[in-house]
Image (cartoon, rainbow, N blue to C red; front, side, top):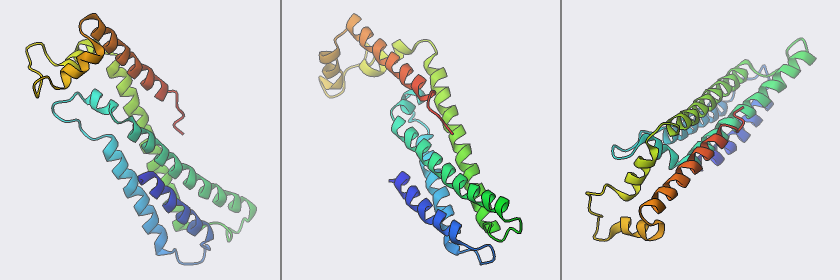
Length: 202
């Protein structure tokens, strides 16, 4: 919802930016649109980088919501590319008409440069976030942590009688079967994060 809201706002913002004459007052709607876009991007960033609950590993918590990572990237990209489109138009007009009369309003240019800068910053942060996930998944001890997180410690009773642990054991099995399952799960996470780092971020 946040992504599509931003796309809608940018469509209106780009139209306003490109149709505002250099000598006219800057429409108040433009600053409202760009402010709303920044607020939406900030909210999505907070959702993506929020702290993990006390009972869960930060790495495991981050891996549960890669969908938000995807939309944070998409949102930052659409902001960056929209701003770049408007700024490119401005540069072409400056090159075509040396008087600058056909170029965009200075306030429009300032707003677009600010949007491009904040989007670039978020893209860099998101890429760093994924890089850290890769580094953390490369650390030792993950197999034991994953088994404990899924099945609990041997000295713990399953919650609610048979509980969820029994249901997982019925599907996965115990001993070697559980370790094999956990190994495949861990490898899939590592491959997934490796794939994310091959994605273009600009």
